[in-house]
Amino acid sequence: MKILDYMKENILYLDGGMGTLLQEAGMKPGELPEMWNLTHPEEIVSIHKAYFDAGSNVVNTNTFGANSLKFESNELELIIKSAIENAKKAREESETEHPKWVALDIGPTGRMLAPYGDFDFEDAVKTFAQTVKLGVKYGAELIVIETMNDSYETKAALLAAKENSDLPVFVSNAYSEDGKLMTGADPSAMVAMLEGMGADAIGANCSLGPKALAPIVDAYLAAASVPVLVKPNAGLPKVVDGKTVFDVLPD
Image 1 (cartoon, helix red, strand yellow):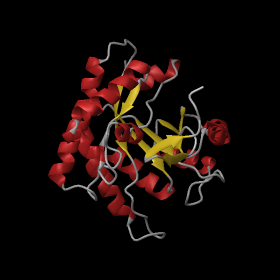
Image 2: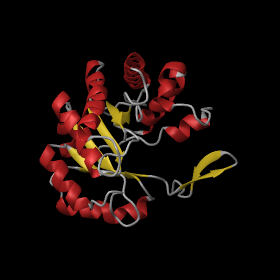
Image 3: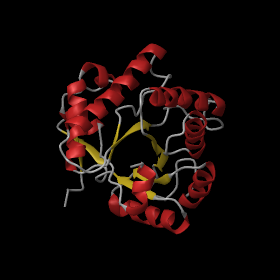
Image 4: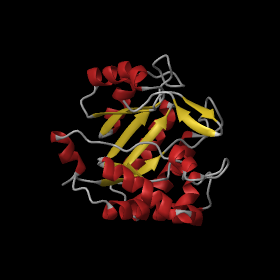
């Protein structure tokens, strides 16, 4: 079954965080999480499998920061190839029977786009396009653009995804306490832009805890005609004894 068809009749369950689990697995400060696809594939497979076993329909590949600004072309290709293979291996090893899909995860470039910074929009599109093309080449089944706090960079990533693939695309933004992106856009503005560009699901992730994101989600639901996604942090992260912990408990 295609994921967009499944979503018409079902709630689609996403996965959770990757970075905190890699820290628990021994990733040191300063290490690039994406390199673990190559150096510790068994750990990545284990994390993905745990999410599938817990009921996730979608896992995001460990490629949040995988782009040509951080990695040379050959290395980037190996990282994305391995990341998708690791997620698919986890799916094969999972014994639960619910539908499962592997999403190419795309996060911000880490550069500020003009006029706030010196990174041109066209260069951002090219950067995202390179990642998208590799995701398509190695068999990603959808694209998740996430944790974007700049509406212009969000537009660049979605444009790259739509121009270089036929895959479903989910887009998720990270909002501040004032209910706006860092660059000022509110949910209604993002709904208008993202739906107009053809995103298949839109919403909010990371940011603050579930309660703080509730009004953001309400604003999306009031304006959106496509499925709305939400993936909040478990509150705000803080470091205790060298480990990142969150202040919202499971219950």
